Image (cartoon, rainbow, N blue to C red; front, side, top):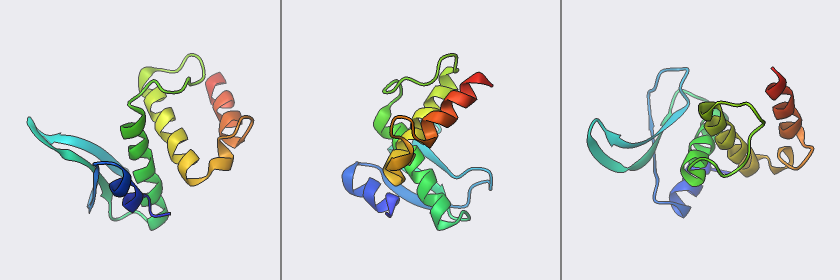
Length: 115
């Protein structure tokens, strides 16, 4: 699945590629400084196609969920919760079998909550 094409087709998001720091896969922006811009996912063109797809799916998850849509494991910070939701959305989009009840993601999340 080409997640960038999907995101642009079903939302008002733009998806553009740019050179970002290597540790950053993508960012969701709606302003540059104080100036509002059209909601845009900027994806790191230096990442592989598969990694760009996952990064765009993750940022699309932030856009769609707007936080608080699903309960994370107990004791997680607000920031960790936001990232967990976006990861869960991305995996549901790209690999739905991982997020079914008792699937790999649920087992991993329960283990991470104990850390």
